[in-house]
Length: 187
Image (cartoon, rainbow, N blue to C red; front, side, top):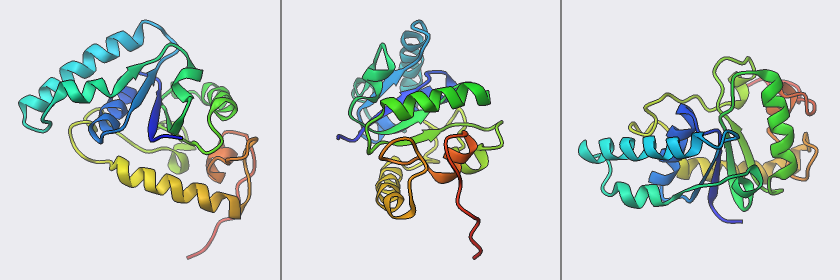
């Protein structure tokens, strides 16, 4: 498995995540179920990267955008991905169906992440972001990949809350109706 990142959903938040990971030197597969969205997203990402270069926040926008590969299907996006960032609509039924599909198709060692702000489950499972995430280093993809690797190692010790060998976060699995969550720990 490589350090490839799969971005599922190429709307405003998906575009921001694609920029964040591409700026960090990662290969990014950008997918959206609507085939018209990805070409428009790449155009917008190009404009955003140009703005970053103009503000001297990025040296080479062309090099960064080359790391973002448009893909036509979910399987291609997930193939070889270490981390999958879901950016679907704020609809629990849609997210549940999408996570079942991600869980089925993603590599056994892949970590599945979700961007959500309106769903109650987002308190435990989502990485909050804003439309300017690509401009302000609010997230640290290299640190996130290290955290993802640690989570993978620990998950096998704590139990499996997923339908696959690589479990989802217990709270994510519980929130999405894919398993149970462990009891709350007191500090």
